[in-house]
Picture 1: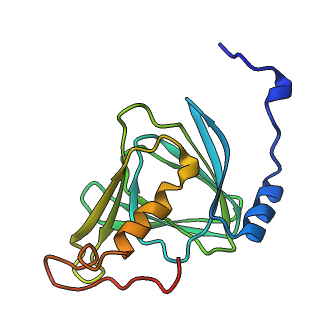
Picture 2: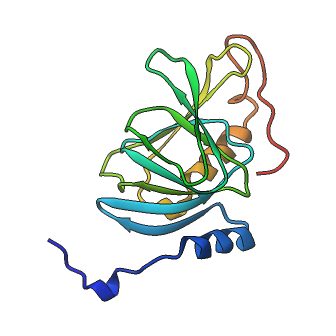
Picture 3: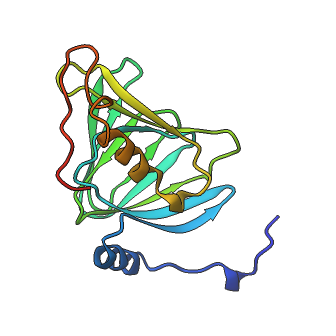
Length: 177
């Protein structure tokens, strides 16, 4: 049962959100965050390399630019799906995915807010031997806290986390985040 009137259901201009993110330098603008709906506009991160494992289904729409969506199959193989500007993608819950697009590209992401006890996982793999390097786990109670940026700060802030236990390769930290 809905409890809001139509006057409380805002209409959002996606181009306005794109302009706002471009001018502010921020990476995410949350549009809605309700128990069964979470929508935000995301600006690309040039340094994105992790695979996100989301406990809910996710729909990605490319407002501007192109995304290379890296996924890991159930067998652990990495594949890439290209989502062009104006393209739409459905990513099922539990699928490790890495949405890679430049800072001048923007996506609308729709999923559901996390349920109590659900966790998001962020995994990095060795660029040399493909072994799991590191995993960050977060309980995401408020998407405005930007869990992706926190996961990156933790990972790239630790040389130990970036060092492969299998082959010894050290994943370099990006120049800027």
